[in-house]
Image (cartoon, helix red, strand yellow):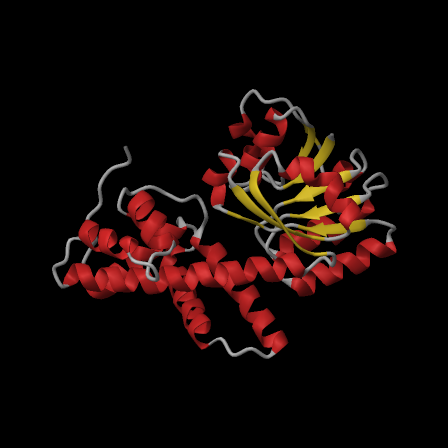
Length: 299
């Protein structure tokens, strides 16, 4: 297929690479000129604006880091909706349902449709075609773009036929990941300061039935303790937590633990860690405890 794509960043780039490597023709736009360089020798077309992308492609994806960037790329004067060829707009960003509803209404007014498909797994999973894609929208639209998802996803979950359902699923997913992440880091730092060997702790925890989670199985042993970056910025954690808490407020669900996790994430950003990798959050907890977990080296 010929596919348009807005946003050649940490997450967008590896998905773009998988699509090009699978033989699809891509028209790309990113406001950052240097974003294209890591694509190397891969062949693609460039466009000067989202509007130009949408004037050359029937299907346009976007994967952008903020709500402001999404609104500008879709609804702006030179946005996707101003393109005369695009039929289907595919939202890979985590935006929450309020903005999705706004995009769907604007798209319908322009005779276009939206499929919502936030992704989970991080840049490394995208490079390995191991992402989890959560998608919602009209059945025929999802079927049309499923072959594109299959180039970078190991699992595709249809959350519903109304755009926005996938956003709720992604935010539930992120709430579980991030609250477990913070709580697990605190617990492991406690054990380390009490004199326990971190590898011994992780071995015992991961041998159990209830305690293991993504932090004990992956983030700690594969990234934090090996001093590797996961690839997602800590500031994105704040954005996702804010979006999840907004949904909770909308539906009248108290989220006291998640609210505290969100406050801690904002504290980390205020401490200057927002542009750092999400694994840097461990440093904030280590500093508070006056101890640093032992780091190895990658490989």
